[in-house]
Image (cartoon, rainbow, N blue to C red):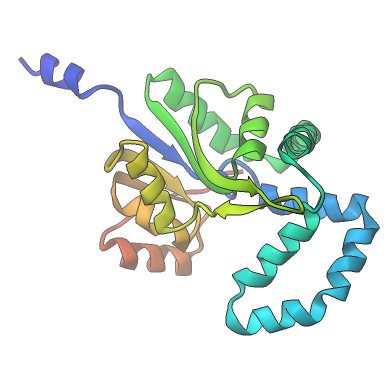
Length: 224
């Protein structure tokens, strides 16, 4: 008698953050660093903009970061950006140690179990999608940050972090999920709505902060 309700419920929904969960470090930061490395004139332009960056820092830490991103993407339209992101994704996946082996294995186990796996990340959509495809991870839904075309190149449009992940999921038709994997306090809103919240490589201090934000215990895992 219980089989019908379980079948009607459909597959479990499992959410994975990307940076710090499936990859060590921040993929978009690595991409931006490569952009500056390959074009020294961008570094010079950033130095010339340092007074503006310092002024922005007085108001918000995010403002100077957005400016640095815009400098890194200066002159790139949508097609050129897509090509650059795809090329970098191909380069990055060659660095096997850059990726979290245990995280990727856990994701594949969920897929094999028939779970609906969604990567919910602050990384930019084209970049993270390219990386996942290069890793052979198909049949994944990806909710990520977005860029938009500007007068002088691509620029940030939607930064998919914190509560914005919840907004993205709601637009995607989801308000609850069974499992969520995160690695920072910024993932607390996403973890809070999960039946099982999993904190990846969290320090004891971070674990206490997350559990306080959630109002309950989390599952802790150490992934390499």
